[in-house]
Length: 92
Image (cartoon, rainbow, N blue to C red):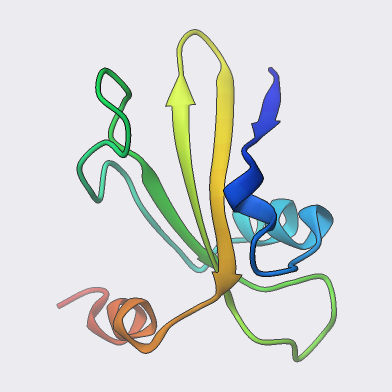
């Protein structure tokens, strides 16, 4: 499996290690949550999860799965209220 990062993934200054931690320890994942960002690309997945630091703000990470086993991470930032609300609605 290859993990690739776009320049936009670094835009908000979140460490890549924190993004990976959030993905691997996610509280919520929404597969194919939005339309593709680039024509011909797959629909991206949304991950909401914690950074490595205990008590840190939850992160939102958006990534595209590229067959057969690659992942392209293109967005990482502190989770916005509209995505945190999905945690509250989970299970409804």
